[in-house]
Length: 286
Ligand SMILES: Nc1ncnc2c1ncn2[C@@H]1O[C@H](COP(=O)(O)OP(=O)(O)O)[C@@H](O)[C@H]1O
Ligand SMILES: [Mg+2]
Image (cartoon, rainbow, N blue to C red; front, side, top):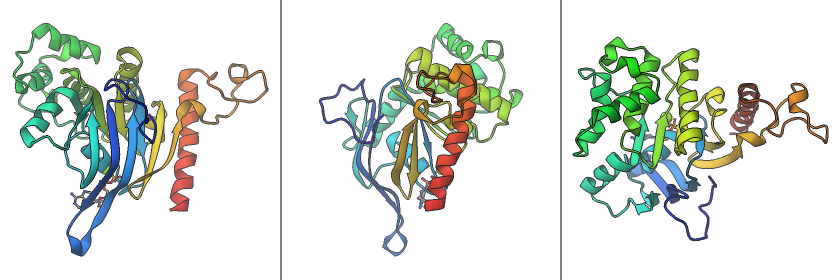
């Protein structure tokens, strides 16, 4: 991901999500709020990005505009090579169903349907007859092979969110968006969901864009975008974060710490501290 989509010719697969000079203004002339202020940003295929920033900084608006759930006031959103602007509501809905996965903080599962039926739903809506084996494989991938017949009310919060992830992925979307996916979960089940998102990028080359206010969640991402007042004010790769020296594993030839030699979970913990520090600096300067 880069804050400026590359000027060179792109293939849809290289940068499946691009925003060009996107503005989103809510309200009437009497009380306008500029939720996104001329935002130009793109996201590379097979990367996991965390979007952070103070409350009201435009995180959800960014996700909703990028996912075609809301239309920008100005500017252009390109998903998987398609400019969303000229699409009418029907075309936009069809594109969303096939090319975009969305996971909400509140799961948004259909309570009367089983896990298996919930996962199959996007296929049915897209007019595709779901194959049982495919749906069960999707549930197995999120670690819920044994829960196919359970309704949401019979599942824990973490399990519900994993069903929601399987449902979001069943159509093979170009991008998976998640708005505070661990916001309603305790820290242990949050970790399961975050590891799942991480593994989707690592093992399926899935592009993932997640809004979170939690530095621990953000530390699972490859890159972090910090928003304030509808703009990107900071952007960094988690691998570049300065982390404290934790022993031989983190030593480099030049004697400095960091550089990606700290093993995964330990590095993530240290990354979370560094992300929290960047957030605190941002909030102090606002
Ligand atoms: N539907 C809406 N109508 C009016 N104002 C809105 C609406 N949605 C969001 N806003 C405003 O836009 C700004 C950005 O909101 P949002 O994207 O939800 O921020 P975040 O997710 O970072 O907390 C806030 O000032 C918010 O009050
Ligand atoms: Mg929000």
